[in-house]
Image (cartoon, rainbow, N blue to C red; front, side, top):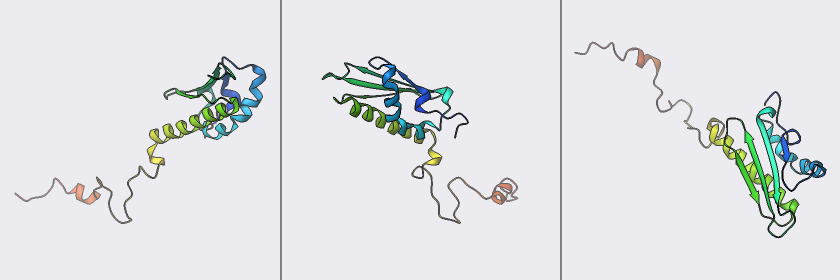
Length: 140
């Protein structure tokens, strides 16, 4: 875990369509992201939330996430209910952060590791004594 973990309350900026008065309930709704964001440093993590045509038929919520050293992640939702749209964008961001983390750190994903039964050498492993005598044979 990072010494200064990222949390939604510190990293979230409200963009177009939202007022500062909306901040408290949005942070509460996005609190489930805190566990996923905590693995990143707060100074290197930014979230921006915006909505186009708020509470209209064609409403579109956009949640952007920037984490230093990674590609920007953008999630959107066109749900008509604002709360449902926020939940949809939040859940999609959590999924994509999990996917990005798994891609970057496959050693933590048991499905990507090579599993060898105990006592068998993994491919590419050779015992040290075979390597030591490899170039010193007198068979001419």
